[in-house]
Image 1 (cartoon, rainbow, N blue to C red):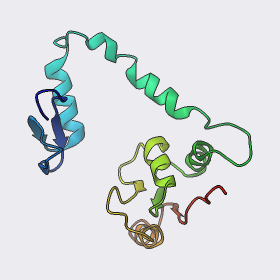
Image 2 (cartoon, rainbow, N blue to C red; image 1 turned 90 degrees about the horizontal axis):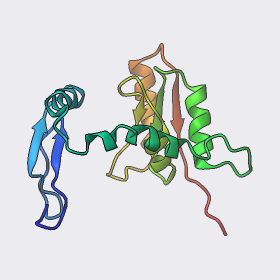
Image 3 (spheres, rainbow, N blue to C red; image 1 turned 180 degrees about the vertical axis):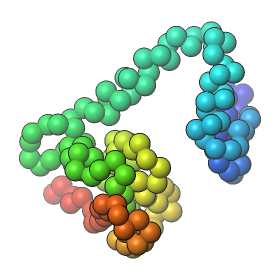
Image 4 (cartoon, helix red, strand yellow; image 1 turned 120 degrees about the vertical axis):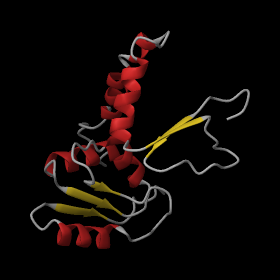
Length: 156
């Protein structure tokens, strides 16, 4: 990004939108899964500290799982996401409105089937959860669909 900042490689299905605070040094444009697999093959054995990355995924997943099975009231956001994940089949579709809980779902809701967690990533589209769920149910009538709508209450 700059001389003192991190070196950034943009990997995405579309080219980067270069801005004042985001200007990658290099880009890999294409299917993200295939791109990452091809990059991994080319980098295998060539990273000087690559071994340090081996346990990183497990550490991240363990951190995300913290508090996901706590039995307390009020429920933790992690527990709610965990319970939704347990209740919804792997091909089920969860749609989200825009609220603070969206961050918890984006971080903690693990998917194995594409397009099964539908959320507005940055545009703050309020009220999109229900119409997104209706559209998903019309497109995939054989799948379970869950809309998460509303907002967490504020502490007083």
